[in-house]
Amino acid sequence: MAEKAVAAAQVTLDNANASLINIKVQQDTAVQNAYATLLNTSITATVNPGNIDTVAPTISGTYTGTEPGEYKIKVYGVSGSLEFQASGLEFSTGGASGVPVPLGKRGLSIKFDSTPSTADSWTIYIPNTYSSCMWP
Image (cartoon, rainbow, N blue to C red; front, side):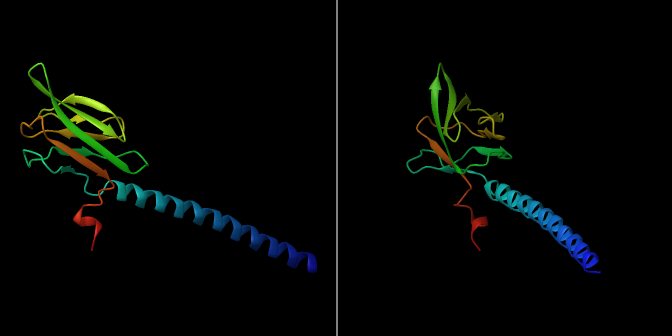
């Protein structure tokens, strides 16, 4: 009789352990999803002080990285055309035009809707701690 009780208790324990493992996996996934959402909330290019123009480029895409940080964007002239340089989380360069250009390999693109000044620069914060979505 005692052996049956022990066996039944062992089955109950095994089921509880399996349930605990499943719950941990679900919660880890929920935390990862929440973190990815945080990193992608209201990603925008913030105009740096001293810019001649107040227009910021458009940032699109989904940030697929896992680390927080910043992209620093600068514009410069090359042979009569404008180029941008991104540094920080990733390094990339491309044309400063009305066509989206990848900011690297982590899913974000940048598009200049108007012609920027070569004196202008912007910062993209990941996560965007300056977004009104971050504060109640």
